[in-house]
Amino acid sequence: MASKTPKPDARAAAKAKAQAQVRAQERKTTMMIVAGSVVGLALFGALIFFIVNQSKVPELGSDGATAPAAADATGGIPVGTTGVVGEAVPTDVPRVDIYLDFMCPICGTFEAINAEDLDELREAGDISLYYHPISILDRYSSGTEFSTRAAGAAGVVADQAPEQFHDFVATMFANQPEENSTGLSDEEIADLAIAVGVTEGVAANLADDDFKKWATAATQQASVDGMQGTPTVRVSESGEFADGAILEDVDYFTEGSLKAYLESLGS
Image (cartoon, rainbow, N blue to C red; front, top):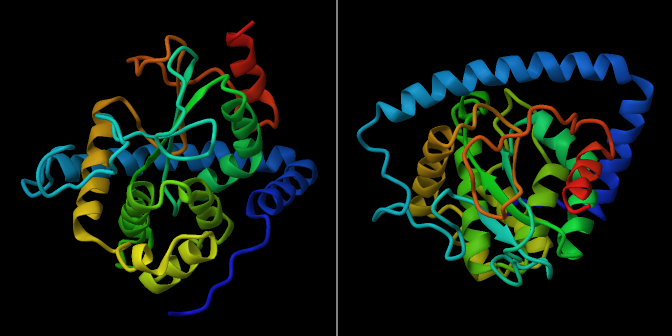
């Protein structure tokens, strides 16, 4: 396999980099985020129009679209207090759903700014945290369908190496390719997975077509559930997935804002 070693302490390194950028260019960064979000909305709408008109896209949960064992009907992958998919996931606290595309640079910024805060709240049992790897930016990987391959690989890790899913997400963003590149190859994705503890046997399955079909189906389901771009954050105070719960009034690109909002729900 091609060698691509992930950065040490991926979350901390990515966060430090993002903080420096925000401090130095706060106004410029904000303008870029707004502009990027508008473009993302348009691209997502166009892609979903394409997806829903394709007869070959299976419904989420149907045969041929293998879902991670712990994923729910929305395509969300729960990470519990122990950091393991599907283990020790509280049900009587606010539910937080994060929609992300591994090619999306704004998702990378979101991860760098908020990952540690979300982990702290998750580990304390103050929230239940669900990740939605989706694929809306395939057109920006020079024909390699990186977004779909990466989301499908995340599904395989969640299913077959649930202890490593959380770290896999972090290292994928720490090694995020630029838009309009070819993205990471299947071998490079496998190398990153192995570097965070996924066995070579599981890594050999990361390009499974059924999980890629699940990623496409999950993307379609996300659009049905109201997600219009990435990153999107949905917060349901009841602890159950709820319509109309997408956050629009919280500036989650300002460090600490999302954490403060979530903490206020328990006060």
